[in-house]
Image (cartoon, rainbow over all chains, first blue to last red; front, side, top):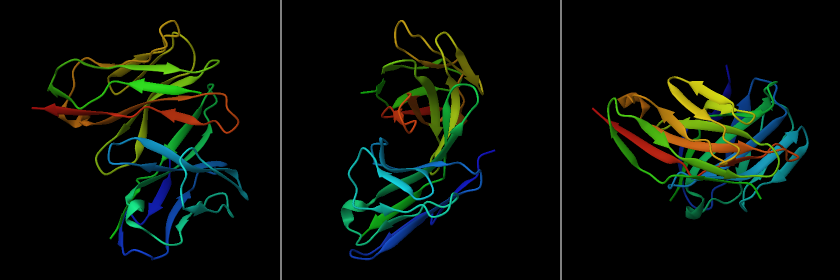
Length: 115
Length: 113
Protein backbone atom coordinates (compact mmCIF):
# COMPACT_ATOMS: atom_id res chain seq x y z
CA UNK A 1 0.00 0.00 0.00
CA UNK A 2 1.31 3.41 -0.99
CA UNK A 3 1.89 5.95 1.77
CA UNK A 4 2.54 9.45 0.57
CA UNK A 5 1.38 12.47 2.49
CA UNK A 6 0.90 16.11 1.68
CA UNK A 7 0.25 19.00 4.02
CA UNK A 8 -1.62 21.22 4.15
CA UNK A 9 -4.53 19.89 2.11
CA UNK A 10 -5.92 23.38 1.61
CA UNK A 11 -4.18 26.74 1.94
CA UNK A 12 -5.48 30.26 1.39
CA UNK A 13 -2.77 32.89 1.63
CA UNK A 14 -2.18 36.50 0.69
CA UNK A 15 0.05 37.78 -2.09
CA UNK A 16 3.72 38.09 -1.23
CA UNK A 17 3.79 35.44 1.49
CA UNK A 18 6.36 32.67 1.55
CA UNK A 19 4.89 29.19 1.63
CA UNK A 20 6.17 25.63 1.82
CA UNK A 21 4.12 22.66 0.71
CA UNK A 22 5.16 19.47 2.44
CA UNK A 23 5.41 16.02 0.87
CA UNK A 24 6.58 12.88 2.62
CA UNK A 25 6.61 9.22 1.68
CA UNK A 26 7.34 6.19 3.82
CA UNK A 27 8.07 3.74 1.03
CA UNK A 28 11.76 4.51 0.58
CA UNK A 29 11.31 5.53 -3.05
CA UNK A 30 14.25 7.31 -4.63
CA UNK A 31 12.26 9.16 -7.28
CA UNK A 32 9.84 11.93 -6.38
CA UNK A 33 7.88 14.45 -8.41
CA UNK A 34 5.79 17.60 -8.14
CA UNK A 35 2.93 18.26 -10.54
CA UNK A 36 0.75 21.30 -10.96
CA UNK A 37 -2.81 20.52 -11.95
CA UNK A 38 -4.80 23.27 -13.59
CA UNK A 39 -8.58 23.66 -13.39
CA UNK A 40 -8.89 21.86 -16.72
CA UNK A 41 -7.40 18.82 -14.96
CA UNK A 42 -4.21 18.60 -17.04
CA UNK A 43 -1.08 17.66 -15.10
CA UNK A 44 2.17 19.55 -15.58
CA UNK A 45 5.48 18.25 -14.18
CA UNK A 46 7.26 21.12 -12.43
CA UNK A 47 10.05 19.38 -10.44
CA UNK A 48 11.53 15.94 -9.97
CA UNK A 49 14.26 14.26 -7.98
CA UNK A 50 16.27 11.09 -8.51
CA UNK A 51 17.37 10.93 -4.89
CA UNK A 52 18.96 12.86 -2.05
CA UNK A 53 20.61 16.11 -3.20
CA UNK A 54 19.24 15.64 -6.73
CA UNK A 55 16.59 18.02 -8.08
CA UNK A 56 15.64 19.02 -11.61
CA UNK A 57 13.10 21.30 -13.22
CA UNK A 58 10.26 19.69 -15.09
CA UNK A 59 8.44 20.48 -18.30
CA UNK A 60 6.51 23.49 -17.00
CA UNK A 61 8.48 26.49 -15.85
CA UNK A 62 7.69 27.30 -12.24
CA UNK A 63 8.82 29.98 -9.80
CA UNK A 64 8.82 27.41 -7.03
CA UNK A 65 11.90 25.62 -5.70
CA UNK A 66 12.37 22.20 -4.15
CA UNK A 67 14.90 20.44 -1.96
CA UNK A 68 15.69 16.80 -1.22
CA UNK A 69 17.77 16.49 1.91
CA UNK A 70 16.18 13.25 3.05
CA UNK A 71 14.86 10.40 0.94
CA UNK A 72 11.39 10.61 2.41
CA UNK A 73 10.90 14.37 2.23
CA UNK A 74 10.44 16.58 -0.86
CA UNK A 75 9.12 20.04 0.07
CA UNK A 76 8.15 22.73 -2.45
CA UNK A 77 8.64 26.41 -1.63
CA UNK A 78 7.25 29.60 -3.10
CA UNK A 79 9.25 32.61 -1.89
CA UNK A 80 6.55 35.13 -2.81
CA UNK A 81 3.11 33.80 -3.62
CA UNK A 82 1.06 35.42 -6.38
CA UNK A 83 -2.52 34.84 -7.59
CA UNK A 84 -1.10 33.10 -10.68
CA UNK A 85 0.21 30.38 -8.33
CA UNK A 86 -3.35 29.39 -7.42
CA UNK A 87 -3.62 25.72 -8.36
CA UNK A 88 -3.67 22.14 -7.14
CA UNK A 89 -0.20 20.73 -6.38
CA UNK A 90 0.31 16.95 -6.45
CA UNK A 91 3.34 15.12 -5.11
CA UNK A 92 4.26 11.64 -6.32
CA UNK A 93 6.95 9.02 -5.86
CA UNK A 94 7.84 6.00 -7.93
CA UNK A 95 9.50 2.62 -7.77
CA UNK A 96 10.37 -0.15 -10.17
CA UNK A 97 7.37 -2.49 -10.22
CA UNK A 98 9.40 -5.58 -11.03
CA UNK A 99 7.16 -6.28 -14.01
CA UNK A 100 8.68 -3.91 -16.51
CA UNK A 101 7.49 -0.48 -15.45
CA UNK A 102 7.85 2.35 -12.99
CA UNK A 103 4.59 3.11 -11.17
CA UNK A 104 3.86 6.48 -9.66
CA UNK A 105 2.08 6.85 -6.34
CA UNK A 106 0.35 10.15 -5.64
CA UNK A 107 -0.40 12.10 -2.52
CA UNK A 108 -3.84 13.66 -1.95
CA UNK A 109 -2.72 17.08 -3.18
CA UNK A 110 -2.60 20.60 -1.78
CA UNK A 111 -5.10 23.10 -3.11
CA UNK A 112 -3.47 26.52 -2.95
CA UNK A 113 -5.37 29.76 -3.30
CA UNK A 114 -3.46 33.06 -3.36
CA UNK A 115 -5.58 36.13 -2.81
CA UNK B 1 8.59 13.35 -27.89
CA UNK B 2 6.11 11.11 -26.15
CA UNK B 3 2.47 12.13 -26.12
CA UNK B 4 -0.91 10.78 -25.04
CA UNK B 5 -4.25 11.74 -26.58
CA UNK B 6 -7.49 10.81 -24.88
CA UNK B 7 -11.06 11.61 -25.67
CA UNK B 8 -12.47 14.84 -24.40
CA UNK B 9 -15.10 14.86 -21.75
CA UNK B 10 -17.19 15.14 -19.88
CA UNK B 11 -18.75 11.77 -20.50
CA UNK B 12 -22.17 11.29 -18.95
CA UNK B 13 -23.62 7.79 -18.68
CA UNK B 14 -26.52 6.17 -16.95
CA UNK B 15 -25.80 3.56 -14.32
CA UNK B 16 -25.11 0.09 -15.82
CA UNK B 17 -24.16 1.56 -19.21
CA UNK B 18 -21.07 0.42 -21.11
CA UNK B 19 -18.04 2.68 -20.87
CA UNK B 20 -15.28 3.30 -23.38
CA UNK B 21 -12.70 6.04 -23.02
CA UNK B 22 -10.35 6.21 -25.98
CA UNK B 23 -6.61 6.68 -25.59
CA UNK B 24 -3.89 6.72 -28.23
CA UNK B 25 -0.22 7.37 -27.77
CA UNK B 26 2.97 8.33 -29.56
CA UNK B 27 6.25 7.04 -28.18
CA UNK B 28 9.54 5.57 -29.25
CA UNK B 29 10.40 2.07 -28.21
CA UNK B 30 8.09 0.06 -26.02
CA UNK B 31 6.45 2.18 -23.35
CA UNK B 32 4.43 0.93 -20.42
CA UNK B 33 0.82 2.14 -20.43
CA UNK B 34 -1.37 3.10 -17.49
CA UNK B 35 -4.81 4.30 -16.53
CA UNK B 36 -5.05 6.43 -13.42
CA UNK B 37 -8.26 7.57 -11.69
CA UNK B 38 -8.78 10.73 -9.66
CA UNK B 39 -11.81 10.96 -7.38
CA UNK B 40 -13.00 14.42 -6.30
CA UNK B 41 -10.64 16.08 -3.85
CA UNK B 42 -8.02 13.34 -4.07
CA UNK B 43 -4.76 12.54 -5.81
CA UNK B 44 -4.38 10.08 -8.66
CA UNK B 45 -4.56 6.32 -8.09
CA UNK B 46 -3.22 3.68 -10.42
CA UNK B 47 -6.19 1.81 -11.87
CA UNK B 48 -4.47 -0.62 -14.23
CA UNK B 49 -1.40 -1.04 -16.36
CA UNK B 50 0.11 -3.01 -19.25
CA UNK B 51 3.80 -3.32 -19.96
CA UNK B 52 3.96 -4.98 -23.38
CA UNK B 53 1.97 -5.41 -26.56
CA UNK B 54 -1.26 -7.44 -26.29
CA UNK B 55 -1.17 -7.32 -22.48
CA UNK B 56 -4.55 -6.68 -20.88
CA UNK B 57 -4.67 -4.72 -17.66
CA UNK B 58 -7.72 -5.13 -15.46
CA UNK B 59 -8.97 -3.93 -12.09
CA UNK B 60 -12.35 -3.27 -10.46
CA UNK B 61 -14.19 -4.31 -13.63
CA UNK B 62 -12.16 -1.97 -15.84
CA UNK B 63 -10.04 -3.35 -18.68
CA UNK B 64 -7.62 -2.01 -21.27
CA UNK B 65 -5.54 -3.82 -23.89
CA UNK B 66 -2.15 -2.62 -25.13
CA UNK B 67 -2.53 -2.44 -28.92
CA UNK B 68 0.80 -1.65 -30.52
CA UNK B 69 -0.50 -1.84 -34.09
CA UNK B 70 -3.01 0.93 -33.42
CA UNK B 71 -0.99 2.61 -30.62
CA UNK B 72 -4.05 2.52 -28.42
CA UNK B 73 -5.01 1.66 -24.84
CA UNK B 74 -8.76 2.20 -24.58
CA UNK B 75 -10.42 1.89 -21.18
CA UNK B 76 -13.63 -0.16 -20.96
CA UNK B 77 -16.11 -1.25 -18.33
CA UNK B 78 -19.18 -3.30 -18.98
CA UNK B 79 -21.48 -1.74 -16.39
CA UNK B 80 -20.62 1.54 -14.70
CA UNK B 81 -21.77 2.59 -11.25
CA UNK B 82 -22.34 5.99 -9.71
CA UNK B 83 -19.20 5.41 -7.65
CA UNK B 84 -17.14 5.30 -10.88
CA UNK B 85 -17.70 9.04 -11.36
CA UNK B 86 -14.20 10.49 -11.47
CA UNK B 87 -11.53 11.81 -13.83
CA UNK B 88 -9.58 9.17 -15.77
CA UNK B 89 -6.05 9.74 -17.05
CA UNK B 90 -4.27 7.67 -19.65
CA UNK B 91 -0.48 7.71 -19.28
CA UNK B 92 2.70 6.18 -20.57
CA UNK B 93 6.13 5.62 -19.15
CA UNK B 94 8.95 5.47 -21.60
CA UNK B 95 12.55 4.50 -21.18
CA UNK B 96 13.75 7.99 -20.44
CA UNK B 97 16.45 8.72 -17.94
CA UNK B 98 14.17 9.54 -15.05
CA UNK B 99 11.25 7.34 -16.02
CA UNK B 100 9.09 10.29 -16.94
CA UNK B 101 5.38 9.63 -17.08
CA UNK B 102 3.43 11.43 -19.81
CA UNK B 103 -0.22 11.99 -18.96
CA UNK B 104 -3.21 12.63 -21.16
CA UNK B 105 -5.43 15.59 -20.39
CA UNK B 106 -7.97 13.55 -18.43
CA UNK B 107 -11.57 12.55 -19.15
CA UNK B 108 -14.26 13.36 -16.63
CA UNK B 109 -16.88 10.65 -16.21
CA UNK B 110 -20.22 11.32 -14.59
CA UNK B 111 -22.55 8.40 -13.94
CA UNK B 112 -26.14 9.25 -13.15
CA UNK B 113 -28.57 6.92 -11.35
